[in-house]
Image (spheres, rainbow, N blue to C red):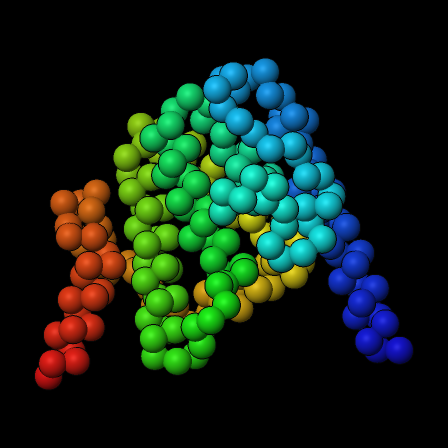
Length: 196
């Protein structure tokens, strides 16, 4: 009985989140605002929320709903499209991590830390590099909301970023601050600590 209640609560919550997340999908079906040379997969609709991975009909490594969100938002600004696609892939890594590396092993943990650090560095640099910092921050938050668009995705994301170190003290190492890049810094730090 308790299992059924949990299932029922999860289903209701997922439906509510799906309806909230897709409240502004009308803007995503407007392919007239996207350049003709941009190929966008069809809007997956509710079917895109039936699994952690979602639908990636063109096998480009990014869920179709996220691909459409980014392409329509930034239209012909291919530099921003590339950066936000990269950010989305980092965030999706924590929703549906790749299989094969034990996440609790030292190698698996370091791999997760590098992805997390890259994600935080890119968020920081996108906001810093934007003339309208609030717009960049607003879109990053919207992107994260879309990526975690179901209860299960949100739970997995929260679980997988748990225990990740703060990157607050490492901004000087970020590439947009003329640093060597956070991953290069972390790899060098790990090598230095291993040699001691």
